[in-house]
Length: 89
Image (cartoon, rainbow, N blue to C red; front, side, top):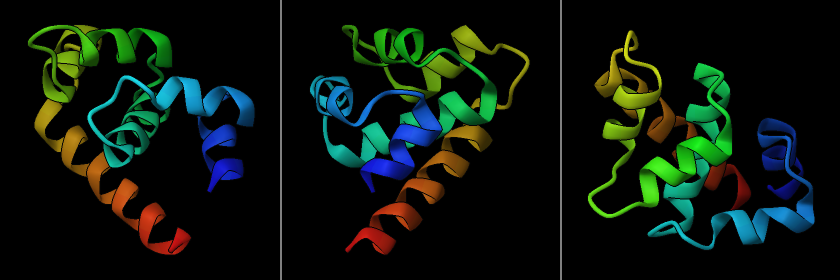
């Protein structure tokens, strides 16, 4: 799982733990990695938008990629994250 997330995010395996720390749960972090990759949004910017007060994945997508369909992209990333987590277990 760490190798796949490193490849998707561009983060080293050592940096993944730090990057995941501010998310509500590991699944949300994995979904954020997918949104970042799918929409070519820098992960650090996406994380900042998602983890600020009142932030969410949908709001972050709308802010950072306004032409994207935020609901569809969020659903896609959540499905991808679920697949990753299922394969890892």
